[in-house]
Length: 234
Ligand SMILES: C[S@@+](CC[C@H](N)C(=O)[O-])C[C@H]1O[C@@H](n2cnc3c(N)ncnc32)[C@H](O)[C@@H]1O
Image 1: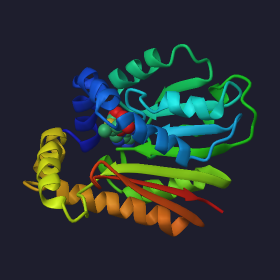
Image 2 (image 1 turned 180 degrees about the horizontal axis):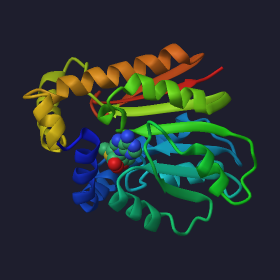
Image 3 (image 1 turned 120 degrees about the horizontal axis):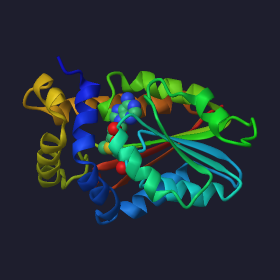
Image 4 (image 1 turned 90 degrees about the vertical axis):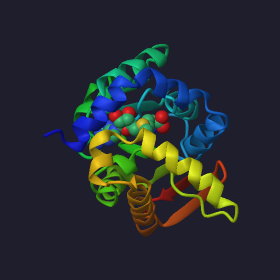
């Protein structure tokens, strides 16, 4: 039987090219990626890890924040999307794209592989549109919080049902997009309402980040559908 993660890899592998277009060209998405990178509170020379980096649409924004002295590591388990991320960031020698599982990130190997990386640990973790695909999103957020050093930051951005007053038509469109874009195994398992399960996972992930953080910044974008939460750890 195909597992959810095999199904997700097959899905994103097959649609890598289309996903890349959507990830870079959707109106307003560049602004959102800019805000997500800003929420990471990075300084020149810092190290940031993006979990589930996909085709790498966030990586240039992160690279801008850490500058030429910093390090950006993108991790994803789907090879075709990673190849796109690699090509898109080939001009930067301090952006590294690795194949791995975001719930068991190969961080020691990743940092060792970065030539000349100062052993200063990880300053921030970013995950955009990923936690809804994980079996236990809150658990993954816990691990990411443990990964960043003291005063580090974890940032999540996810699409979930809008809570604005004008939400019904927005949510109808959102529901259609979720049904169409949910890998088949997940769709079968959650029957006709994958968007409800998606909301639960996203709520759980953002709630865990709020519990763990000593300072939290929340924003919403795109008619309230995209939630951005940044948490500063102790
Ligand atoms: C919706 S895409 C988002 C990509 C990127 N973060 C962005 O904002 O465009 C989800 C990505 O998460 C990856 N992914 C899902 N679960 C993962 C896991 N457990 N480990 C690594 N990558 C994962 C998929 O391969 C896919 O590239």
